[in-house]
Image (cartoon, rainbow, N blue to C red):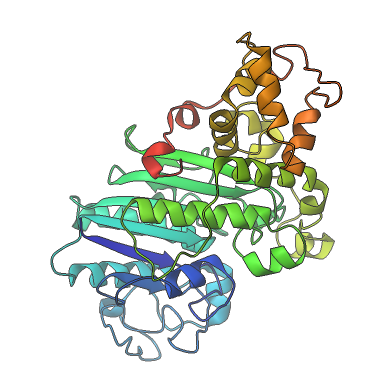
Length: 395
């Protein structure tokens, strides 16, 4: 299976950054740029090794510069500078044209296109897939989108809010503690899927808009679990669909270890919440507002939202501790001995053990909660319920 991968940077971010998910994944990509993959630097960025998007002819590999006023045959973007890219995403349409032109030169045409992007780069994935459906409808597309934010004036644009039938798998990470009004994500209520066959899921994670991508910074602050799991999921997703790396961008984890990482997120939730932008950031960026999907409908995104961070968390927990899960959350099963065994098996996973004790378990002497104690009304969206994480390579 021939595969081509796009690494789509967010606003002001580019290939020369360090410790950020798109830069590091792109840096570790196997093969050669333009033959096996393409890195799209973000709108308004100034990489030392490439010009700002929108300032070069998108149909050339050498990225020859435009003249001062640009021209229609050389892309949508007339001469721009970093400020317009930061404010309005100027340059990302040229990035899409550049990406299509690059793919057209690959021989033979890949059967599969994989994409990973963050922020406006995540929305660039959607825009690019929209156009690829026109030029190469036979190519299957898989997208890993980290907190897709379209920015002011772009949220309802058709190519930024439509997932077309060529997208076979779509996973979006949503930041739980980003509060700037201008940073509202393209969540499931803002996006239209044209095909019910697209395998799609949205996964909330704690932290602000950059909290899941800047691994080094978050780990230094003692709240790196969200970034660690997102990096792991991004790697597994891309590798499952054929992207190759010179070395793994993330360690691999057992289902038990993943459950403990999620439990740490729950334990450290107050610290994650403190990463929300402050008053000044809110005043200059559309006010401070809890994101709609958290304020009104988080239970549509994750079943048993009082305990589980997202659907990946719930399903991994169910695989790791199936009898305990059924007993507590589904009010079924009578093998209390096995429930106790699974509870005791978490003792070496400190955060996980403590969060399970919060459900009503006790160590010495062993005591179990009433069966069905964790059961709650569920309004999980059909798209979330039917999504297959196995088809994405995440089990």
